[in-house]
Length: 167
Image (cartoon, rainbow, N blue to C red; front, top):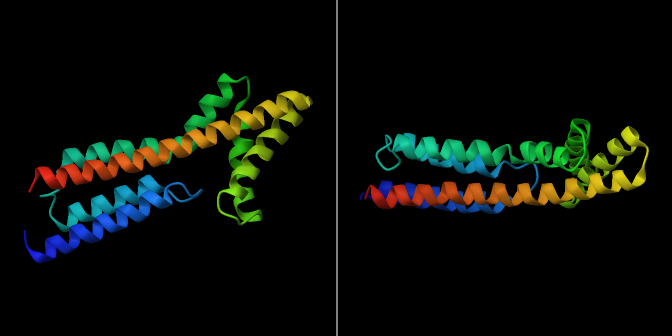
């Protein structure tokens, strides 16, 4: 292995490590960053160290992880008796909370819960159901953060395996 390729591998792995850490911060797409680094490395090495099959698997993981906030909220809220409006309220609340309370993670979580609470209260007019919706939204958000981190880690593992297998 030549020096330039070794340096490129080290740079890619360091950037991936940073992306893995950033994947738990709201509004930062960890799986997308991880995938982009792997794809950039693949382009720079003419797909010799990262074959197209590995890129395809990474792409599937990236899509699942990057959209987990949306599909987990939609499926989870619906199974708990909420509505699509509750899902939209929690997602909108998360975005607003991230900007109104600019403390990483805290603003997003507070906004998410308040958004679900408000929409469900306006929809049904009952505080008990609204509180349940807020609790469910929080639980699903935390679970989707774990999914996002896990898919980011899986992309990195695939990248390392492809480097090892093509050496």
